[in-house]
Image 1 (tube, rainbow, N blue to C red):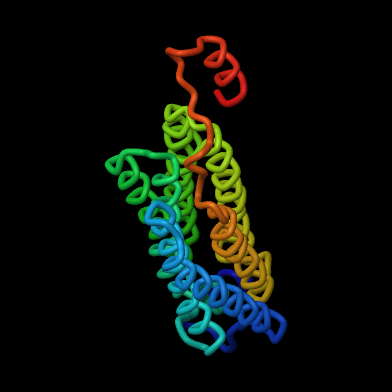
Image 2 (cartoon, rainbow, N blue to C red; image 1 turned 30 degrees about the vertical axis):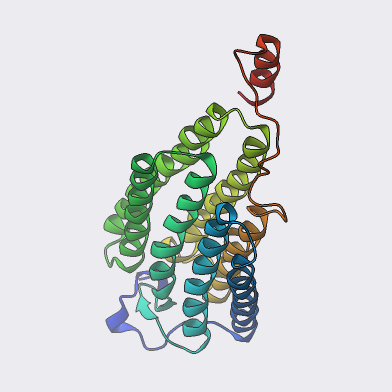
Length: 262
């Protein structure tokens, strides 16, 4: 029997995070805390249109702060197959923060709330499948949960990359489209790396617990801290002074616009 096949009840020792990984958790916590406080205080200084983005960013970072404080304090974990330390608190974090990220993208794109909530619900199902796959004791069941989560991720990916983006394009606002394209690409690239880390860690056990938490800390900072600053500008999420394109007034302008963004 390989080490990765040892069930938690039979573990004589547990593979836990090392000092370097602990430092990464603390650094990520500080980055999230500073970003969250900045967003919260800045929110009262901006217009109402921009304020919702600042508050959403603040909530996203605040929830992650709870998670990271718990992790470097030695809380929020259990033992899984392979005698690995598994921080389930991450999944509690992701189940709250990733839907809020989707909500931010949906608002930015001008998407209707029914579609936004549908993508958010799919996202929560994806996170739950990832958690259940991590704690499963039967390898076949583990990978079935992973495949389910991966399928749900594809739906979330399409919702952000296609449905939301098309809605942003339909608003015919070049500034909105440019900003949405930039921040959605950041989210999609960073989120696409999470399943890769899962396969190498909770899935197969090929990567140690310390490296797992280092990579997750980096990805969380990209998907939350970098995202928070990317979605806001000093003048707001998108400038109200940006030119609006009227297809009826200028057909040539429509052709140029569609060639650039569609």
